[in-house]
Length: 390
Image 1: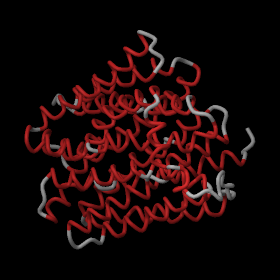
Image 2: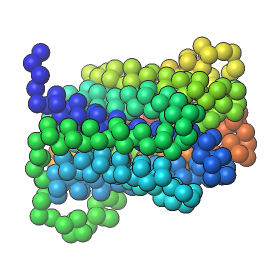
Image 3: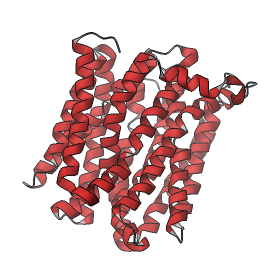
Image 4: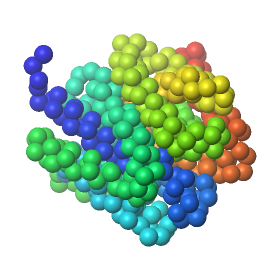
């Protein structure tokens, strides 16, 4: 097959997503080092990580508005460049408060990418689910490299150089995107965001029954996913006695599993019922969370990782479902509303899991996460079984 310009766009969007996801994952493998350095608890570091994910969610909606006014290319470049700068700020922070601000800033600029890139790809490809599934590979690719690299560097040189690895990843991608992707025309270049009744527009999208239902499903699962991603290496070290390096390897295996199933989930949802695909993923995710509690050797941990990774791939079916429900003119804004609502709602998972772990222990915490997956599965199953149309 002949390489086309749209393939370049897809590849570089995927690489840009890799950078923004790498930045958000670089902290998890070195959480024990950060808590020791700043003398803080799991709850406090969970607060910082939740701040990052909340900021990430809050910029989903305005990213669509900014793309409408300035074009997708500029916003993606801002996201990649800003991620590099703020990762350096977080790595160099002398006090915990400044560290928290840097981490939140990473979330904010990283959040500018996904909605804008998804909209750009939906305009470029007819098979939206497949394109988004491939684009989403940036996350598992970062997950494969970031935990092992950050853990290795963290053990030998400290957590600050581990976090600063983001800068090395971001700079070449920024240059390539600037060089190889053509400028994109703004859809509404002369319209001020304030003139568009931003708040009313946000609410009008969010109260649509189809968007509201899918948002609730996504929030329940996202709480569990964000919490587990933030603390899985710490859990493996504290609950199962793994070394930081081994915990990083298991953590990376999760992203390999997610990457291996994500394209298939997106493609399957293109030609099969999206709700059945979503429900199946959520059920497997619940089983995976429960398996993490078993201490029967590495093979159980890797089985749990595979099932949980497959479970978190449900977004490759849910997000195309949302794009299907929106007209072309609504996609930037409407998809941004959906992403903002579920990412912000689910972002409390980091502080929630940190607080649960401190107060209840890891065993009860993981049971709570399994219940959240079960609740999401139940909602989707009822919608499909009774043909409610949400």
